[in-house]
Length: 188
Image (cartoon, rainbow, N blue to C red):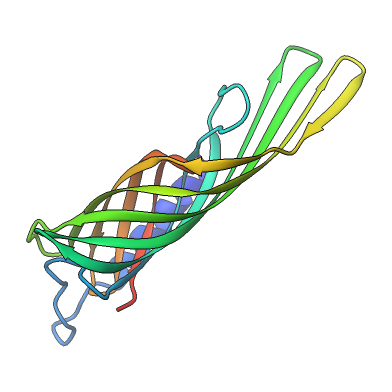
């Protein structure tokens, strides 16, 4: 939780210090358009793909997307993402489990154009592969498992750009995180 508070404070200070001055270009009405690239990084609560689902673990995620086609009032994108999450839980005196998940996937999203300066909202799906390192010990033994699994889900997100190139980003859903907050960069 302390890491999340520190990241939010850092994000606020970065965005506040990059407030546009009159000489800069104005923030775009629709930040995602055909040919644009977005890059985002966030921290949040991870999804326990393997394990019993008890507890909330920290997670980090990075993603990139490019606008391929204008579709109605929005843009269809394609890109990729990578996520990492960690979970640990202790049951009584003699049982402890840990799960480390690493996921890589392609992602596609539809970014709706609201015609609000700096606002970008979207929904999409990731599809890829995940790797898990699961350790558990009970009574006298210690065991490990290293499953590989298909990775898919759904996500909903929003970004708000304070400058033409930098903004804040939030995503919720079921992919490598349940929810994450972070920074987004418009590369082109």
